[in-house]
Length: 475
Image 1 (cartoon, rainbow, N blue to C red):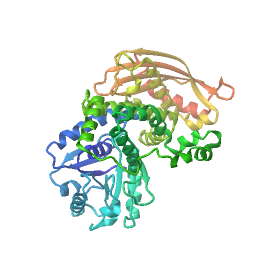
Image 2 (cartoon, rainbow, N blue to C red; image 1 turned 90 degrees about the horizontal axis):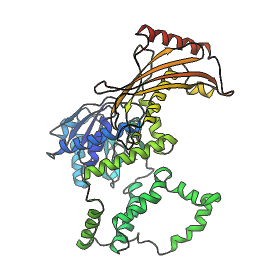
Image 3 (cartoon, helix red, strand yellow; image 1 turned 135 degrees about the horizontal axis):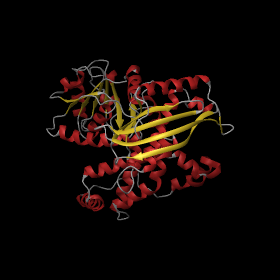
Image 4 (spheres, rainbow, N blue to C red; image 1 turned 90 degrees about the vertical axis):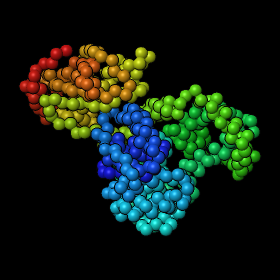
């Protein structure tokens, strides 16, 4: 599902939305009166192009076209999705939405990135309140999948359905909030932690770094893959949530928290916060911190993907939609992707074990092409690699795009022999080759066996096609 999106407001969030749409193949039109908007969005896109493709084991679709426009009307004309991301001032949002609706398609989704306003508040005085909906993302929008989707009684059901479909198709998780509430769900939770943190700093209990350490070395890691309630269910031991509530519930009556109040933001407290934050992270620029954040998020999200858990499950589902169907061809492209950060070693280049992963994935693409796919393996049959010869010909680094082309050089009886070439996509440099022999196996007996005739015929046809295209390749 691709089309044209308009981004009104190109700050941190608007830039993130631009990247998420653009890198998923949408054409994106941007309006922002800031004369630096094009440069700032370019910086965000640079990080997004580095990070987002690393999440997937296949290529993202070709980027859409990006354009900048001098007026809201010109930017939104003909767009299917319009994302309003102007500052959190209600009068500004009302004026912006009115200008959008004066020029946009009545059937377009108008999503607001607001972190606090309810949709009914945004819809006040609107020409078509039914097309306005809250779509509140999280920074960086191009990596974090959560979008809080909030509608009102005036929002058209078709707009809600279209919103969910478009966000889902871009690998995001549209969390539909059941009822309107100021600040939605996530920000209300964050506000509680933020208030407690301000009190601890104001009272001299902790520094900004110590509070961040408490989160990132402790419960933040649990929350990243389980959230709050699954974490506490486990904390209850074998008796689960009931035991946890009965054991720790009385603590809710103890005077631990200052959540019902907030420290006065005096100049003294503001300067204290700024000084502590500078001491913690002032040695790095914001762009360096963003790149560090993105690399960490990529590694964590990929780890979750390997386990098929939480946001990782979302990535797997999106990857299945992104991966193109393979068809028999003389020049068979079996992989096209980006090298992720967690594939590099101390020398700064791709670890040799990861080449094995690349060629294993390429072989699995060949297996699926001849019918030995997931269902085939579930039936009790598969191919096992019994021999490989890999040659490393050039360095490969994190962030580089590469392709693998594969030829079947032998396809008799129980055997498939594949020759893989891994090349840098930008200049065609040959990075590595692999000669791989696989044997057909009965998984119940764990012994070699003949493949079914339908699979064998496809293998032989592919081997004949590749032989006619040039015979055995040079190693």
